Length: 252
Length: 289
Ligand SMILES: Cc1cc2nc3c(=O)[nH]c(=O)nc-3n(C[C@H](O)[C@H](O)[C@H](O)COP(=O)(O)OP(=O)(O)OC[C@H]3O[C@@H](n4cnc5c(N)ncnc54)[C@H](O)[C@@H]3O)c2cc1C
Ligand SMILES: Cc1cc2nc3c(=O)[nH]c(=O)nc-3n(C[C@H](O)[C@H](O)[C@H](O)COP(=O)(O)O)c2cc1C
Image 1 (cartoon, each protein chain N blue to C red):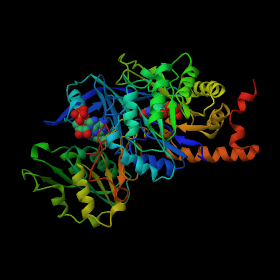
Image 2 (image 1 turned 120 degrees about the horizontal axis):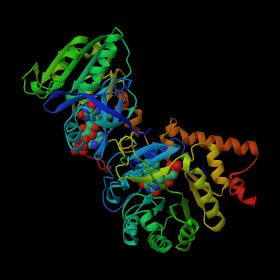
Image 3 (image 1 turned 45 degrees about the vertical axis):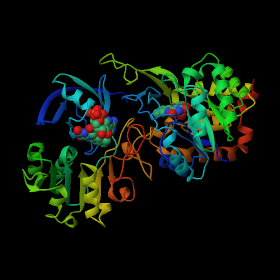
Image 4 (image 1 turned 90 degrees about the vertical axis):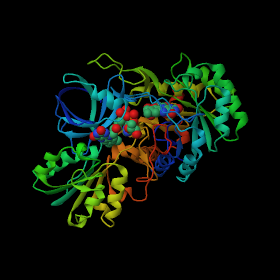
């Protein structure tokens, strides 16, 4: 598939360093799927889908800076939706997100709610100014917020919020956020690994399962095609939570 | 090697885990990602574009360097099949440095990558370079040495003969064909590197011809690669004269790793049906001249 041309029809400044871009095309995604986003002349980077026609981007480096320089009417090249998204199952589900990881979870929560599922959400942010998608989550169920500095909700990491909830009350738990947070949550939900689905982040190059850049040790699971959503039991005993590889294949 | 179907260089072979998984999925041998003297991040994206009948790539030889690669080879070997290290360098000295720095069941000299400045096809399109590099590596290692050839020349047989003179134990043909794709919306080349190499079904007829010509002219084995995704493709390239088959782009298809079993099983039931051995199949097409 060649990159599809997508024109930006709306840009929402969610926070100082997070923006949502809406496109003139319906991506028809499974929540949790991603796009390879080609910023012409700069790079092609993976982004989770946060709306049927949008992505939500945190400014971190060169490609995301270039995305922030775009205006309504400009366009990007998109490959996707790619990969395996979240699988909805059960009646009561818990979403646990950190930072911009809330993006695919919002789309998932809305799909779950449409199906009549009971949705609870726990989101962790650094501080109150980093909060995104509060209304989207409040509309579909209970929302617990934590901030590292206590400026909003419970003071502490997302895992501090988990102590207020009983993970065992839920049929399925969905995670997306910084890896230490996700590894911590999985660690606190021992015995429930098969009921946990985590969207994980590795260095993607090809996005089609041939270059090997995103393969995890020791199983060789190719996150870009077999993920990015991986079940908790498939992460047990792997590099997840310990290390990852950079663009040259070196561990870091 | 009992099973002639191998993983091609640069497909998933950056980690031991992937090499081992290919072996456990039914590959008879695995070739690593090409490794060089220093870590490289590769070209910026897009690094691949799917085009009519094939795939364009310009990965740009990303690799952790040989200094950090022995562990991956050792893990790959746990898969129980030979691990061939694909290596690249800017000249004989670098090739020897990498080869001496690694312990593998064989080496494949990448003299054919079409999109990395100073490496691959930039040196491998000259027969004298191919011969000299092959000879120096052969003199410095005890394991088999294969030379991977570029099809982006007027006469690939000349390169094959040079590899043979240099003492190669086999040649591997073909690497990708120089190619390009342009985004019609913006007029920009799509690949981050602008140019890349074409692989997949579109290049199979080119590979068949190259293997046929090489197998007709050389005494050393020819390993066929290019567009193989089914047992029929494997049979065809073996009929052209290939002693072994490598599979690359097909790993990115819906079958994924299962492509190894479907090729090997299909090939062996075909041989049963025909009452033939692999040996008898090899070069069959060359009898009809
Ligand atoms: C499946 C998946 C979904 C993602 N979804 C989102 C999302 O919804 N919103 C969001 O803001 N970010 C998301 N990311 C992360 C996003 O891809 C990186 O932030 C982005 O690539 C940074 O590019 P850069 O050039 O701005 O930064 P750089 O300066 O190049 O790098 C900064 C950091 O980004 C990482 N990065 C750079 N390139 C890649 C790449 N090709 N693949 C993976 N990581 C890379 C690097 O590891 C580095 O640590 C996702 C990543 C993956 C794998
Ligand atoms: C993504 C990708 C990366 C590759 N990397 C290498 C490499 O590092 N070294 C090499 O010798 N060939 C490399 N190749 C070439 C393949 O090994 C093979 O020769 C070519 O793709 C043709 O076979 P195929 O049609 O089965 O893919 C690469 C090909 C692809 C598609």
